[in-house]
Length: 378
Image (cartoon, rainbow, N blue to C red):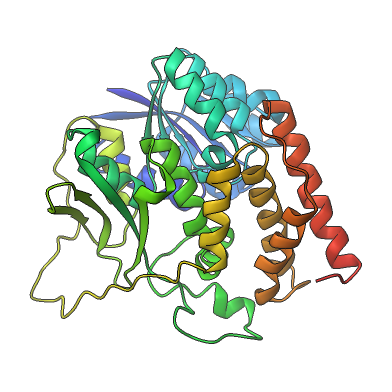
């Protein structure tokens, strides 16, 4: 039985992970849970799964007293401590942003098996993580449906025989439409996936796919030229791999994160589970479109992999803050990418960055976004 730690247990990935575990209680033990502040849902999860350890961002002594058999962690050091407990076999990293980056790095050093759903970690620290993976025997498995699909498709293939990989994208709510003054509610109304607010906005701007290209580069050690994107609104196919002999393989499943979560939790086994199966008689059509190579999000992805260093750190930090301000109704939807581009233009590239510098650059990028908005320079 595997001891599972879920960082971000009250979010979309965390809840789906617990649903998978709920159906396979003989295989998994929920050893630890971590969340930011949703204590109501966390309380219910503790009562049901009875973890030995729990992390919450800010200490709450009254909350702790409700669960006398639980050891609590909190604060910046607490997330590292719970992620390096020797009894933990598998960690799901699903807290958005880079708050868990230090914990992720320490978990690698402890040679943990990790299911990564927090793409920001790989975006800002891909070079650092690549070096650590060579030194330690930690295994990092992709949870994102697209990267999980590619992983399944190429894990037993020879890398030299892979011509190109293709990440699919639903296109979000506005693909193919001209949008101006859209409301927050419209942006958050994703036609296919149910996700957190930040990633849903990123899906609408297509910045989510920009980050996924960067993430794919580090996961699969492929150059930008070998990473493609296909717009596929039905979201039934999650990734393609094209081989040098002209053949292609794809992974098909309904747009539900429980499929890739089930795969990584049980890896390297495949375990039967009662999910909805594809019925081809119900699928009337599958459509595919290639994006314009000059799309801002594609240009930013390409530039990130050309420049590396501090560039993707600024990109991620600026986008995160711009999305935050949009959700607070302080900027318009079509200003998000423009603001990101403006911040990048103000940044002086640093070719190599340390862990400490990543946090400094991230802070700088967010401050610049706020400054641009306050001074109305966008």
